[in-house]
Image (cartoon, rainbow, N blue to C red; front, side, top):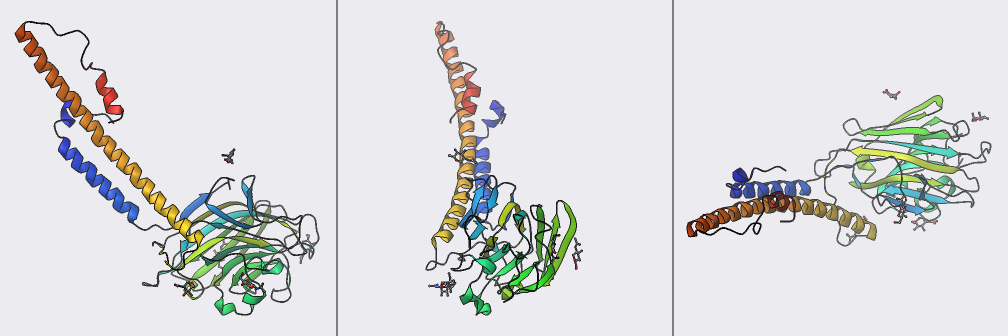
Length: 357
Ligand SMILES: *[C@@H]1O[C@H](CO)[C@@H](O)[C@H](O)[C@H]1NC(C)=O
Ligand SMILES: *[C@@H]1O[C@H](CO)[C@@H](O)[C@H](O)[C@H]1NC(C)=O
Ligand SMILES: *[C@@H]1O[C@H](CO)[C@@H](O)[C@H](O)[C@H]1NC(C)=O
Ligand SMILES: *[C@@H]1O[C@H](CO)[C@@H](O)[C@H](O)[C@H]1NC(C)=O
Ligand SMILES: *[C@@H]1O[C@H](CO)[C@@H](O)[C@H](O)[C@H]1NC(C)=O
């Protein structure tokens, strides 16, 4: 900030008003709604943007979803911020696109001896790992919820490396799961072929056409998989959801890692907290949002006060110079000389401008 002393100090009240208007605009902006967008290229151990459940942990910059030194493990990792899927008042649906890269390591085992796969899912904000959801349940359902699909609120994209004959199509497959474990639309796939290769998945939903699409490609393979499903998310999911990944192993195990994750949606809105239904997680999320808003506000206030303070300081310097000059003139009139270096030196002006008001 460079100020011309004589100009700015002559109109401090205008600047004060401008600063206040500036603060007000930013305050209103901080209250306005936001859609969700993030880019994660590395999962840092100290980052608080991911909620880890079960076996899932950040490890060397990726998410290690489950361990393989024990059988029947489940892990989930979800983003701390929630996504607004649809607006109950306008019935508008969001668009969203997410891309993530992951690796499955079948550890040299032959088909039928590894499992069970990884799911990218959208679920109600209070969703947690269901009890007994290991193996083919993929950390999403269990024998209880399997029986009442209409009560579930789950939409997932599955990379299923083990065919459970109770509900799966024959063979390994990629596709969609909607409230149950039977794939709604799928393509055959082979985890052996892609073991340790970096998979790049893009999942997108277009609200206007209600089309959900999956495109799966690999870093070191020409094979690609393209599956799509017509689905009205309003019939499956609540207004707000959490998003993330789940994996499970049974007696068959394999390594599942998520390496990177981008997401963006465009339906705006503020999540309302149900006073009687606020679990700790929701409270934390809400608090975090409030804090973020508060921090922005504090920064804005600090800047504005800083600007006002700097202007006041300039005014002070200007005023003291005037006083000094008047005093000097008066001293001259009296015929005495002012002492050499006793009052405000010229160099103090920039210090005051940049220093604390
Ligand atoms: C996490 O925090 C600890 C302690 O503050 C620090 O020693 C470590 O280097 C941090 N790790 C990363 C990945 O930033
Ligand atoms: C399924 O999960 C729900 C939620 O965790 C739990 O209440 C229920 O007991 C579980 N059913 C079985 C058979 O474990
Ligand atoms: C999957 O790939 C492996 C290795 O190429 C092969 O042995 C196996 O038969 C394939 N499975 C299917 C169902 O095609
Ligand atoms: C995937 O398939 C859909 C329709 O089946 C098509 O419109 C789209 O272009 C395909 N995407 C790619 C990248 O092949
Ligand atoms: C809490 O939420 C559940 C399901 O979301 C709902 O059935 C229940 O009525 C709510 N309870 C209150 C007190 O709002």
